[in-house]
Image (cartoon, rainbow, N blue to C red; front, side):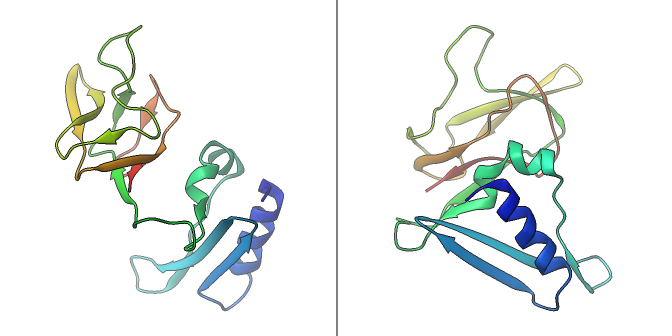
Length: 147
């Protein structure tokens, strides 16, 4: 499914009264939903085209027929600069498809010269991994998914 179709679907949900839309094309499913905002009203989660193209994988999920187990998102615990490897020029901590153990280091987030390790919340296989390396991440940003 291409980005223009996803944008059209987001606009459709934003202009309608529906709260969730799930569209499957081939082996991909796009799920767009409204979530309550701080005031308890329904608001559409907005995504800029730049963010959508950078994280297209997070907007598209595998259809239930091909999903093995629900994926657990690994979110950034703090704002800072993300490092996927222990040092420049070294191999990253993990790659897509790697099997990880609970507590295993996946990333390092540098904030104010303090290095914070981001550990796997559970054992499993890395199914999605951010392409961000050496750039800033926001608190709560999904960095990986473990299935």
